[in-house]
Length: 491
Image 1 (tube, rainbow, N blue to C red):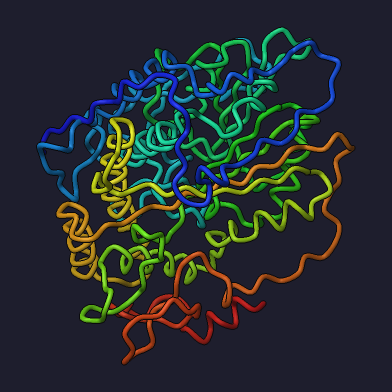
Image 2: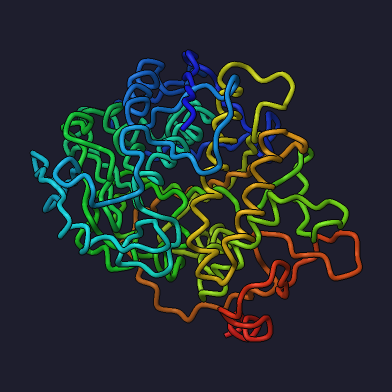
C-alpha cells in the first residue's frame, strides 16, 4: 500500500466561497432573526466563519482517524483503503478494540461505552461482496465499515473546509446555540455516519448537547475522541421521532437520501423534533458530475462524443439503486417544494456549490487546493464503495474493474476538468404546534425528474434529455427491465 499524506490548510477566519448558484451576486441570504426578548445580538462584523482553532482542533481528530496525506507527490491505488489504523475490510476482526456508544437519551450525563464483539457485529452488520453494511437497511447501498467511515471522515472535512465552517447561515446557527439559555441548546445529526460532524459541533459548542443517530455506530471513534457533550445512538430515521419531540435547535442530515423510504414524510417527522425558530439543514452531493462551466456531463457509450468513465460509472450506480426500487436518491429534487408546502416550516433557502475534483482550477488558494485534491481522493474511494451495489445489479467483476480503472485514470491524469455539485436546503421551524402529514401526496414522476442526465439514444452524439431506458455494459439479467422500471416509477 502506498503511503500518502494530505496536509490540512492553515487558514484562519476566511470568508465562505461558494461555487455555482451561490455566487458573490446571489450568495444565500440568512433568514431574518426571530423577534425575541433576549439581549443576545448576533455579530454583524462580517467574519462569520468557524473559529480557526476549532478547525485545527477537529482536524487533528480526523488526521488520527484517516491517516490521509498529500496527493501532490504520490498516487493512490483504486483499491487502497483510506484508513491506516484498520486497513482490513472487516467489522469483526478487531473485537474489543471497537467501540460504540448507545445512550438512553440525549439527557444522559455520561456516554455508556462498551466494546464491540462479533455477536454485536452479526446484529448490526451484514456482509455483502466483502464489505460490511447496516443489517437494518436494504435500501442504503454504501458500506458501513472502517473503509467507508474513513472516507466519510474525509468527505466531512471537504465540505467543512469548503464552507470554511460546519454549517451555512452562521449567525442564525450561533444564535440558536448560544450559551446562557435557560434550556441548554441541542443538536441532532441524522445519519451521522462516521460521527465527525457531530464531534466537531460538540467541540465548537461545548455547552450544547449533540446527538448523532444512524443504523450503526461510528466504527472509528473511541472514547478519547468523543467530547463529553456528544452522544451516539443506533436509531432508524424512517421510524417515528416522537421520542425526540421538541428536543433540538439544529437538525442536520447529509447524504442520507438513499436510506430514507419516504423523504416527504421524514421531513414532517423531523419537524416535531425541532424547537421554534430552530433550523433544518439538508445536504447532498449530487450523483451527477459537471464540467468547469457547470454543464452536466453526458451519459454516453464508449466512442460517443463526450464519453467519460466518470459519468458512466456514476450513472450505472445510480440506476442500480433504481433497479432495487430505491428512488430516494432523487428526493433532493423535491426538497424545496416539499418544505414550502409543509406548514411546519418557513424561510426555505436553497443553494448549490461546485467543488473542483482535483486542483486543476486556476487561482485556488491553499484551502481550496486542499479541498479539490481531497475531493479527488474521495471520489476514487466512493467508486470502490459502489462495487457491492454493482455486483448485486448483475455487473461482472471485469466490467466493474474496467469502469473503475477508467474513471480513476481520468481523475488522476485530469484529462477532463470535472466538478462535484453539493446541494443545501434549509428551513426554519415555525413557532406553531406540529402539523402531522394528513393529505395525500401527489405521486412523483421519477421517469421525468431525476438528478442525473439521461443517456444518449443509440446513433446520436450526446443528449441531456431526461429518460429512463439504458443498458450499456449489460447487467446479467437482474433487476427490472426498462419497461418494468417505467411502470414502477409511475405507481
